[in-house]
Amino acid sequence: MTDRTCEELAELWRAVFGEAPPIITDRELTVEVLVRCLPVAEPYAPQAPVTAQLARKAS
Image 1: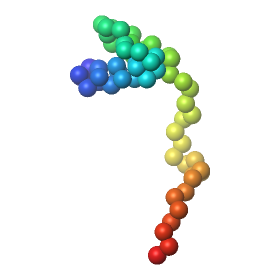
Image 2: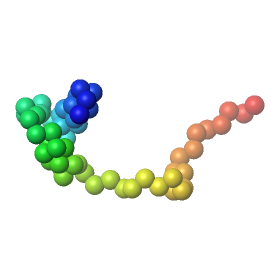
Image 3: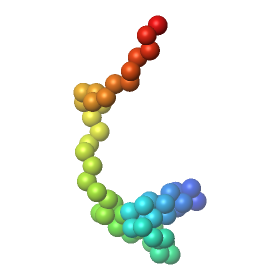
Image 4: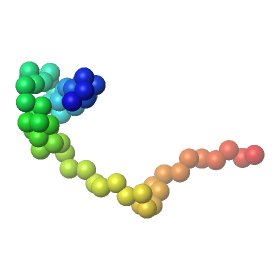
């Protein structure tokens, strides 16, 4: 993993658990713990109907 990936992993840990991550020695295990603890999200659906539209300027 790159340094950038490790930084992002630490930020995600803070967002999920509200505290600094423990010393990361096994990155794969850390990722597995994070993925298991993330809330369930609806799958992305590009064909889903638009729920909000921006107001258009009258020209």
